[in-house]
Image 1 (tube, rainbow, N blue to C red):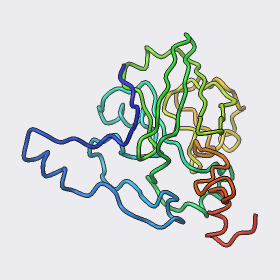
Image 2 (cartoon, one colour):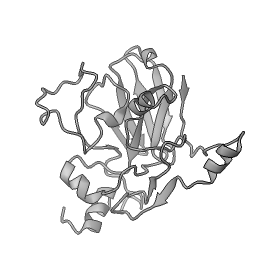
Image 3 (cartoon, rainbow, N blue to C red):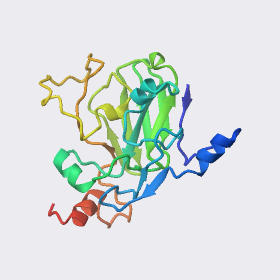
Length: 220
């Protein structure tokens, strides 16, 4: 398996005029913080890059589009907003870049351990055959003094299938919640993977969640 350490790996092009031309195309777009807190989003379409489509179901997208097989993949953001309506109001953009430099520690059911670091887009992933990854698995996010583990044990490695505020919740689908969903099409809309109470301006600065509320003019 190949793991992404995500230290802002550049998109490399070589070999043909077509690839060279693709490299000159714009793949990101600057935006305001109310669109994406990172002030950057992906606009490169299906152009191959480790920064592509942050916030989407990487595993499912690669399967649907004959991309390299992924054992798992996801995106980490600088906030944790679990309320769907509030998230839609505070972050209006799609394919928003997340947070670079976050450690994601994942252990499969056979004790196989991955320790990944998010790249500039906030993306992390492991290339390989999903069948080599024993499920359910456990995951935690670490950054500085912040450590947050998942309370559930997923059966699927495409994190954004569930970590998608726009997806219907299990309750809306009429499903009884289970920590080990057996249905391959299972969805359970919830907050993005995030670093809660992250203070990029230092320990006395507001959290990102507070910053976004201030930008939107919403009282906490």
